Every structure is written in structure tokens, then in C-alpha cells.
Image (cartoon, rainbow over all chains, first blue to last red):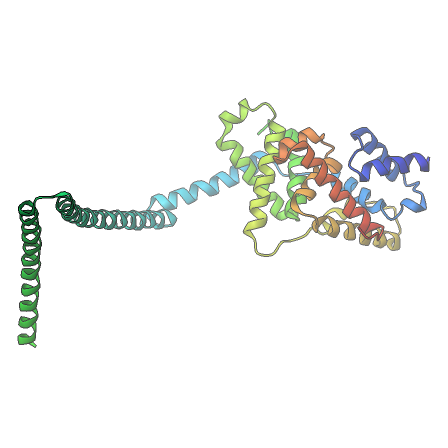
Length: 175
Length: 161
């Protein structure tokens, strides 16, 4: 008998026993007639047997009814204007505003980048024409155009700087 | 709710083995029932309702464990009222201690090992059924079961792994 049970237990520990063999092992430990060498592991099968007899004694319908009535009272609370729904709406508005601000910043930065790149490419085009020219008059004309372009940009920006300085002066006068 | 009635004890035992006490297990069962109620039209269509309910119970039990700071562990007093009353007080105390030790060992097992062991050794499901309930492959189920049993064996018999 012990040899047979030991063989079954070896399979059991290895996770290779069938459900039928496991039933046999459980029946052996439930019989109370356990060999000394198996007494150390008997409580494990005793616990399995105890767990198997545990029952859920509550009525499912009443449990469901009570939990559903609890949920509907929470819904009613939210509908009357208090509770978590308002908090969630506020969070949603904040998140939407943050996303809008990020998108707008990205659009502005992209526009500025495009302007700078456009200016650079215009200068670069002139430079290429100058490099490829063999005629000195043509080279002079292209150089003049490039310088005129630069001076135009300089004038435009110096106006901005001057107006800025004027504003600063005004502030200093006020102070 | 009649569709769940045949498995209610299994669901409760599984939840209890996962969360570690009757109180939280009852909460889990309540949540399972609400989930079934909310999806009642789909639930009727499910082929293996038992496996589906066990999976939901497992997932909700895991949520329950994660939602609390300290993990409760089962106490043998939860079970012992149905134990052998014919034993003498000394023997009964000895039995209770032994069962408590095994329960502690079970609670120390990793979550997958614990649930696989419960589904096999307490509920008697096949490897394939356990695989469906736990989202583990059949091989993973076998490996988890083997490791769980090996750990318990070594601890019960004081063998070094």
C-alpha cells in the first residue's frame, strides 16, 4: 500500500499526477489510516479537504440587490451636482486647456522656424548664383542685390530696436 | 442569478484563497455579481460560464489585494469550525496549529502558484480548464503547480530545495 501511495505522491509532487490519482491520494489522507512517513504532509491535504467544504451561504439575489441600490444612490448624488463627477469634469477641462496651450505653442514655434529657414534659403540661393558666375559685372550685380537684401533686413530690424530704445527711454522718464 | 448559482461556492472559495479572508471574499463576490448583472445579455451567450466567472473572480481578487495596503492572510479559525469535533482538545489544538502552518505556507506562495494550486487541489479542475481561467498556458499551469507543490513539500518535510 505504502509503495503505491509513495509512487502516487512522487507523481503528485512532480505535477504529473492525474485527477483520478489525486483523488486516490486525498482518499488515503482522509481515511485517517496514515503511515508515519506521510504524517508531515497530512495537514496539507487536510486543509484542502477543509477548503472544499466551505460554502457561500448568502442569497445571491439579495446581495446583488443591495449592491445595486448602493450604486444607484451614488449615481443620484452625482446627478444632483455634488461628488466625483464634477471633479472629473474639472480635470477634463484642465487637461483640454493644457493640450490646447501645447498645440498653440508648437504652431507659433513652427511658424517662426519656417520664416527663418525662408530667409536663409534666399541668401543661400544668391550665394550659389554668385559662385557659379564667370562674368564680373554679373557678380557685382548679384553682390549688390545681396547687400541690398541685407541692408533691408538691417533697416527693418534697427527700426524695431530704435522703437524699443524709445520705449525704454519713456519708461526711464516716467521712473 | 440562477446561472451563477451552481458555481457560487467555488467562486467564494477561490476569492477567499486569493484575498485571504471571508470579508473581502464576500466583497469580491458582490462585485462579480454586479459585473454579471451589467453584462447579462453577453453573459447568456458565453459558452463556459464557470470559467468566465472564475476569471472575473481572479481579476477582481487581484484588484482587491492591490487596493489594500497590508495583505491579510487567511486564518484557520475561518475554517476550523467545520473541522473534526470528535477529537480531544489537545489533538484539536495540534491539528489547528498544523493547518495554520500550512495556510501560512500557502499564503507565502506567489499569486499564480497559489491560484493554480487552489484550482487544482481544492476544486479539481483539469490543466486546460485552469489555463482558461488564469490566462496562463497549460505548460505554465503545470510549472506553477509543480513549483508550488515542491515548495510546500520541502517546507513541510524540512527539506532544502
